[in-house]
Image (cartoon, rainbow, N blue to C red):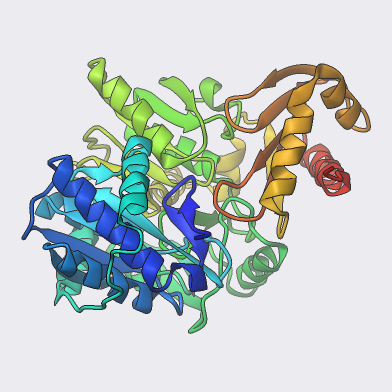
Length: 472
């Protein structure tokens, strides 16, 4: 079976998830819920989904397995992942989200949530172990659950419309790139609640994979075209399941997710920020908070936040380089109290960035420049076999000489970090980071430099070096 847990949930080709795999892993999840004491038979398990063509069928498989395992499936329909997680917290119910997030349309995934939030890596290991035990014994049935889609979405919408003061974005002209994100309708409702002048853009019935961490050139072209045509103050969007924000400035240039996370940390008045090693190295210098660095993936960020809370710290939040934002403490920066939501959310960071720009009467580009961050860039090579990625990383880690020889065309190695992938600081201060994707046949490259031109050039050379590697 070619499905496995990655940085966030179970992922694989849609054809490999349909049928037995989705039923099997859902049954394994239900076994884990019962054995670990998170839930008992008869309890509700919520199921949500994104707009991928394969999602309804996979959701039906999951609901069938939930019912066959003695639990009660509840259908929350198509909604943002943070909305499902938020509703699960309210109902004290476990939940399952059918989504492949930003990965190609022929792939999909399943995210599992305990009643109090995302599963941990230890939970994933337990679920995988149960899946091995149950293999060949689970019926591939389908079922329908009680419909609570409107309740789930309404609760999260109420949370989003209480973050800022009423009319906080009054007069702000915002475009919403709708494409196929499950956030597309709620974006418009929330922004209009705050008084923004909203224009819907680019609605699509077919699923479009939008990666907010490495925004595709064709997406940037769309954003810049719309910005020039309409004179927006900002254009916003999200990935397929709406746990990663996309914010473009008045010229249509996307802001990096870690910058949006940093803006949100300052907006919230955070005291502890947990973020992966891939986030910008300048974060530590741009806020009155402690920074904890982790491996890539929301489970690692959540573990870092939980550790900080256990140590008695407050004002704890986290974000990933893609901008997905998590909170472990309550905050009240401008509106009502924002209760903790320890799963990635795109709404809070988007509203934070827009509010700061509007409040300070600055263009988004001016607000971004006010942060003294190195210029960062990132991209990925698609269809880069995972075996080839592993071979490259093994080669670079094998010896100092291998790494030095590989990077010789672009610079001299001064320092390196192996927290997640291989992050190298060159002797001139530039940074290049190679990291295989945890859930797709892709190789990612992240860079930092003093200027945009230097960053683009370093990224270009880094991607070329990856492409040139020939595995044995």
